[in-house]
Image (cartoon, rainbow, N blue to C red; front, side, top):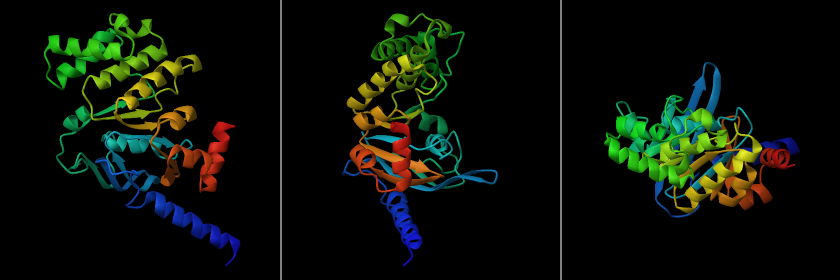
Length: 272
């Protein structure tokens, strides 16, 4: 068999192994999210080309890949900010791709932190964290304030409760955004390049909060280019490119012994 054909067969097998029905966590913890053959296109551009994966309760999954690989679209499909074209997402055994699903109830249990902070500029930190609790969870003002102060303390910003966004650094604003998501008592946290808009000296504080959440047992799906975070905190690393899962495994497997040339080239580029 010609070498090029052997390489094609090897890549096909790697894609099947990484992207098949068994593309789930490596232990027997209860699955909290199950994605099956998820597909999404924008116009004629196929962004997700049949993604399948399981995410275990309490697992930290880090998704790596070059720009345009579909990572952010995958996260946005998970909490239904984007409607998949086909496939299924089960979240806590509920099919959230079904018609008439109550998306607000889904998003209460699945917090998301974006690259941009999306804080209300006319509200101080405390009221930014309180607002969704009162509007969505129907908590009283007193209860929402109690929870907001608790979560601001958790991210190290209780002393900034009365500061407005323009009085905070970018890293502090992102931590307020994390506190806002945590105040909804989510069962899963999604992070979409949460540190990429920050100056390098501000990244550490945000990553420290994310590490604390991981250590506390929060289920997390994290899209990031922070390789040290992926190495130190992830239970599983997924490498995506061109809308498919190329390979996945433990941080040691992906960073030290990648089986795909595409993964190896990416790790070499971002770590070099």
